[in-house]
Length: 279
Length: 109
Image (tube, rainbow over all chains, first blue to last red; front, side):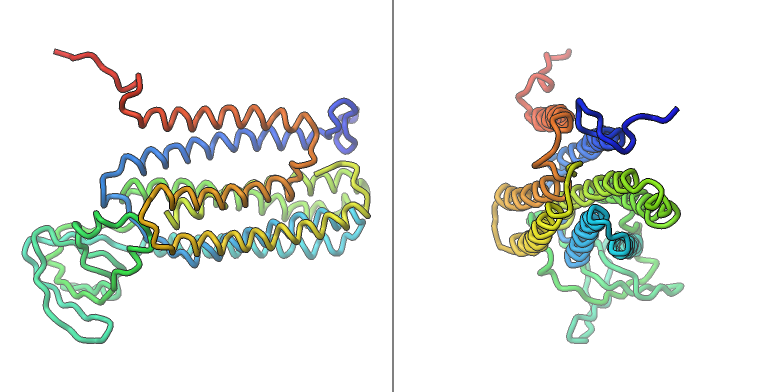
């Protein structure tokens, strides 16, 4: 027995089965991401001044990824429109671009994750002196106050010393930073420190602070959605393409449903970008 | 996406999709530019960023997902979703108000 309304709409609702299904699924997804956004708000508002980092992420990479997802959204809807106009070749070209965009997005996200896993906060012993080379190339010795902290990426990591490209953290100044545009004005330099002077160091993984925890949770879950959506779009684009000849209406419906999911993924990112990168 | 679109209607829609696409790109650039403005108030900065994000979200949901011309049943599902989402956000904001009931406590000896 055939399942009814898989390709033709049900007379009373005007919808085929999968469309009702995807919208119910997207409704549950709204609540899933809503719960995480709620967590973000509570963590952000509850953070003490200076504890919530600003400008930690590269805005230009985030913006590029936003544009990549927007491009993928237009190609998804154009691919569906091509099928409606019975142009299968154009559909495949558009969906190829969608898949390339998905790979691009994941590639940039992976680079950003790698950047955070190689970005360290280094806590030093009291009264430590470090060698600082500024942007002009001049080197000078700087004695740090008690509880000195360095922040940046490790350039060299020898047995007895390491070189960090970053900044000497000024906790008092950091507490005054409330916007990303203020943070970007702090100059970065090369700092050489003896390993014996390091008390503790930790990278900016999800365990580092509440910001990185919610950042990795939100973007990680979103990236899983991108991966899932890409697999479905690829499956319809490639292995399932034969259905276009046997049941074009149902095939078009599948493209539409996968497209709705993809647009939702884009929609979530539209909110994640300003919240995590700009505020 | 509407179920009874013919080729002519789709061709007209394509122009609309392209317009939305350009608007989304412009909105993204505008968001970044607005974040660079030296606005001291955190509330104003957040409001501007979320306002632009909401407009972009409306464009994606309304035009790419075709919500502006959907069937009643889909609207029913979405109204329920909006109700619960708004409730979640209300509870979040309410829990941050330290004068609210959930933070009131009697003096414990």
